[in-house]
Image (cartoon, rainbow, N blue to C red):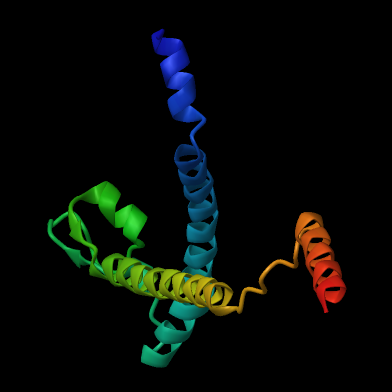
Length: 143
């Protein structure tokens, strides 16, 4: 078997295609969660603490970096301990993990509901119906 044919069989398996779809959807889902965190949750948390923008909270680790600069500008001047950015990413992870947990939980519940549905047995086939008629006919003759 040639390597190209073997690779084609590998790439076209259902698991690989499912994984690719999952990665693409996961990337889009990650952007949605990032927007929820950065645009909705962190401003409210920052407002509750006292109009603080978490993404710009840092501790300067160099004399060149002065307080009050934005994180991007501070990083250009020297090293900084960007703990606010870390807190934002940590909250982002917690919300993303919770969302994935809820999706998996919902899928498991749907799968469980499908498995517990009673399965109706199939009706008799045409052959079985014909044999039943013959049996009943033979019974009525012998009586």
